Amino acid sequence: MLGDLTAPVGTTLDRFIAQKQEQFPYATGELSQLLRDIALASKIINREINRAGLAGIEGASGTENVQGEAQQKLDVVADVRFTRALSKGGETCGIVSEECDHIIETGNKHAKYIVTIDPLDGSSNIDVNVLVGTIFSIYRRRSPIGSSPTEADMLQEGTEQVAAGYVLYGSSTMLVYSTGYGVNGFTYEPSLGEYFLSHPKMKMKEDGKIFSINEGAYNTFPEGVKAYLKHCKDQEYSGRYIGSLVGDFHRNLLKGGIYIYPATEKYEQGKLRLLYECNALAFLAEQAGGVATDGYQRILNVKPTSLHQRTPFFVGSKKMVEKAMELLKEPQ
Ligand code: AHM
Ligand code: MG
Image (cartoon, rainbow, N blue to C red; front, side, top):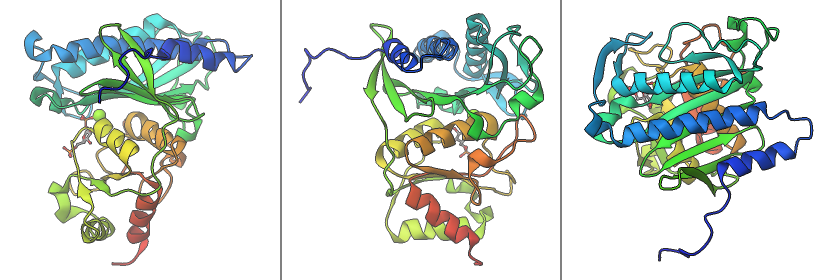
């Protein structure tokens, strides 16, 4: 069944944002505009990704990012697009991006917000036509309006997020975000150039049967993680790992499951970055009824000490994450 093809496509992202703003009589519209800026940049990235194989922009750029990882050409394209959109949009005073070691000053000294962003996560998947994502968090600045943004603006706990979300460039492109009042998902209609509300009030199942982890480094996992994986296999759960955090998180959000990137010998603090990967997804997970921890404590309570800080990450259905934490605490 194709469903009712004559049905109206429904609420656009713009209308949804406007409706939400109306519910807050004192809202000034700046956050709404910022969300629109992100949506616009994501449409441009979506276009670039869709023609990557033709435009000669897949593959490595020959440069490295701040963590010494090879940058893909599209990483750089996405970084430029988002930085430009946020700078021109005027609502963001500073940005922390995975692709840049220092704080990016947008020149909008009077803007209220700062953004932390991974413009294109999982970008090594582009060459093989597998989905990638953008992950973002929005915070209110702490420094005085009119001044340059500071590290203190950027190093806020995840609990301080005003909004967070991701864009998934997959078989269809989706924007999923929360301003702290639940999680809503929008699907992009490319012929109209609009996002439409397709997944209202998203909820994560309390329990699930999917575990997502790269077992290549199994030998160096903490014993508690090994014990949890044994538990998953004893229960005959399904192992699913795309290697694109947004994709793995999104599937688990819809179906119930757990994503784990633990500490390993290679990545002693885990691989994922607190400020622009884990905090946003932790915020969304909690808003959808899930849980996100570093194995021991709530991700959103971690006090960041540096811009590109890494953390072990356990996120997903409440019961699954709690079980993993229980086994981590047990002496093995
Ligand atoms: P990136 O920011 O360099 O793309 O790395 C983050 C990605 C995640 O999307 C993914 O879950 C993870 O790295 C995969 O890492 P690994 O190849 O070690 O499993
Ligand atoms: Mg990343």
